[in-house]
Image (tube, helix red, strand yellow):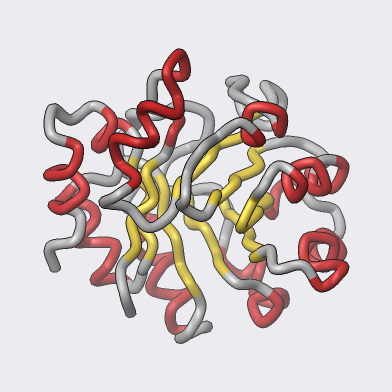
Length: 211
């Protein structure tokens, strides 16, 4: 599978967000946008009005780390999301939320994320309805955390269950952990501090493509 890189703007300077995005745009495949509500995760980031103001040619990969995501899906679709990821842990009826993301014949990809403590089996019955699964390799809420290695087993299990599914991994990604994730079966890598904290962002992104 072709490996894609998705810089996470969680680690960007929000005071000059579009300038930060422009610095990585030419070298990237997606732009990962973390939406946090201070309830599901212990942090607050941005909402749909800010997403609407993002200027980029990259597909917006919107990761809803929020309670009751079904109440906000329409807002993020209108804001320009190319894909919307909801958490298994926040959806009482996951199949219904997936259908909501895809409703109306719109071309928005539906994805589900699982936290480090959440077993892969909890989403087994909806894999055939998904465009992507996001495996969290840190506990969500803050950037710059160390990689949790039990994510590798989850990636391997998912790849065995769904050979053609996009598998994204987010948390603690650097040149070393990226290699481990790709070997396990991931094909989309989210990196925040590793990219935006680098002196040479182009070089940092290129280092994630060396396999």
